[in-house]
Length: 234
Image (tube, rainbow, N blue to C red; front, side, top):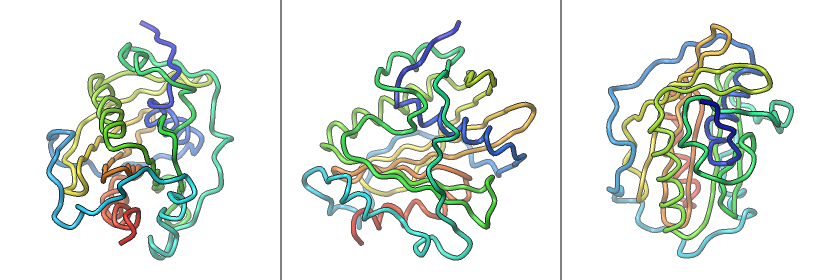
């Protein structure tokens, strides 16, 4: 069954898949441990102090990780508008169509305040890490993010047709870090023209802020804690 998707929520999958296709590289990232619950509600002891009200996009931008924060070997990527496609269709997952929203290739979630930065590691397009910050009421962030990740997890295998290119997608929930108030994490495996790429996406809500780090699994694991702490001004 073919389902035409028009939602920024699915940008978590589609925009990443499109960028990977544009890179045309062959990567083999390590896999993680066996799946566990995608969402937990146990905060870490040092993450209880968060913003009481939603922050502006400008305030979020100032809380993104920088090249200096990441360390040696990281370079900030320019805008990736060239990797976007207007015609994206999801095959085999009708639930993704029910999320609603804007264009699937937008690569951003439908929250009012946002900031984003993407980096490559050691000049390799196959070793990338992207950070996204969002701000809204705690209830809206919790409900919206939970719905997105649950919907993605409900379709462990489907396909994305982007600009005539067919992308096989496998979604697996993974253990979450004990950060913030709520956590979500998924491992996505893309197969494009015989190439296999593994991407991890981890989201942490701390009060009125949502931090999402995605990219090569090892890089996500290495930087999610600093991303959350920097976003919280620590």
